[in-house]
Image (cartoon, rainbow, N blue to C red; front, top):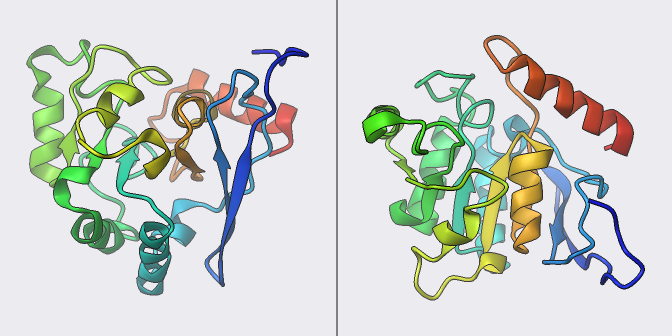
Length: 208
């Protein structure tokens, strides 16, 4: 997506949290947004992997975040696994307690989509991880606004999108003005090779 001369510049706000992360990029909804916007972010193991980082989650709520949407593969679990990464499990549970179990959800481009026949994959994830999986017709970067509509009184700008893909998770969240957090992947094992190639290409091209 190329920026046009008439497009509004991306408006961003920096939130700083001492010791655990330097800052998140908050991109407001803008026709000029590009996935090549510079992102200064830390891996999820730094954001949600340590007990003291609950202060960070609390700070986010104080800053106006009311709900959290997680990607699944290489964000909460290794690719195609139902096992939460042990470094972030307790922090995710604290996140559920803080925001409410109904406002911490998973939006996956596989589980919960039309490709997931009978939503069997989504149901298995919910049973194993204890986190609601959104059923959806559109895949990221689309579809996120429909998820926000499930929470009366919550706007897209009060939602945090956490994922590992710049062109789906981060682009989709920024498109609707969400707080976006791009995390480092856990492993390349079993992951989509094409998606990994695109990820590293975006990082190289955008110097993020």
